[in-house]
Image 1: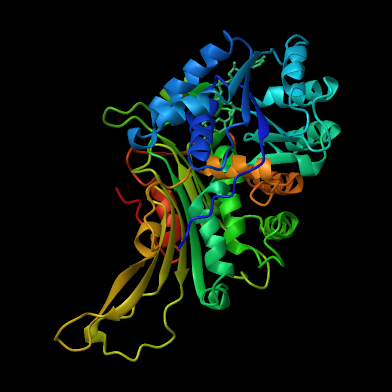
Image 2: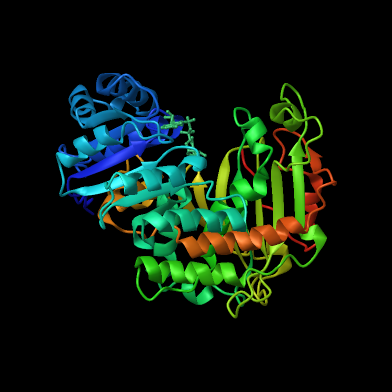
Length: 487
Ligand code: NAD
């Protein structure tokens, strides 16, 4: 099997907030890898924009340090570093004012006929001023693109307002709303697994699937984002975007083509089919307490009375023919046992076992799609325990991990941002959220949150646990259990 890297056309990527954490930790390393793989041409320019800075040389030095911090030494050669850094330019520009835009225009004007992508790696309050600034300065032609990332609003009203502001300056086909979970190889592989094989799709429905679990667990707390996170909570921070997007890809109908609007239309239908939670107990909110050496959420949030959730578990349904009666269990939280993201498809038991009970019951099949830590897909199947001793059943894992199954070694899993930034340049919106999707996700999220009593404190849980006891009960009462968050 041959790896195909198709180079993109020379481009100008203008990164607002280029000295910040997201740009330095994710974008700069992602672009370096694309240059190293031959996808980003040497003539491309990455133009860093920030409120203050000491010019291009200082920006290159900052980016060079980011390469040292985030690229493994085996992938970092002196020649590539030099080639990459020479693609970088810098413009100091305060997006709330008028100065700096002329300098940016002059730089861009030296290469008029190339794709221009404006990446907003800044706080969301700057999205609208930047979009208007680009338009006012005459920098955004019909082929220009803007890239924005969560948080895309904090409720339906603010998401609508943001869409409207961006829409005043750019058409929908120019707006790239990133959810970096969609750029992960395994998430794209979920679509390949479902729609490029005949094996799974006929079973992908209520007749054969017992339930679906989606877990995004983090072992870190909210340190560093404390007071900000306290105004948001896990439901808005993680469920509204990442978990609902994963749910959409799991539950959507096959699109007619793998093409942006065909895929996004199907995801939108899933969001519109999300049922309101049937019972109050279908949502469990949790908050980590002090345990061992770990500080409590309230200490991290600097709010001793906080009722904001750092964990949420939900049981919900998708109201359509395919999924009627199949529960989807979602959970996400901070300071849990490990950093794990996975989608688990639990198939039904066989309708009748022909084997004697002494040999053990057949295990129901489980398809686990792991996004992190090690991206990969496993399928558990029941087999005969090898060797003598009669017909004894056991289950085994078919590991569909990339490096195992492919005939070429995969020496590095590309980061989601690598794929997504190149998709922006190519003009492919398939893995980006459309404005109506974001609004539909907020509509359902708002409905769930409006059912919560703000006076009610979330259930406490220990650092390093799987979340509050009530989250376990959410499944136990249905006779099911969460897949363990493995260490
Ligand atoms: P940051 O605070 O580290 O960086 C902010 C950047 O914005 C800096 O380069 C700063 O110079 C620039 N800036 C601030 N005010 C400006 C102004 N008036 N004019 C021009 N530039 C200005 O923030 P970050 O962590 O990089 O996050 C940026 C955005 O991305 C935020 O909206 C955040 O929510 C989002 N985000 C971040 C991450 C992450 O991993 N850091 C992940 C997902 C989303």
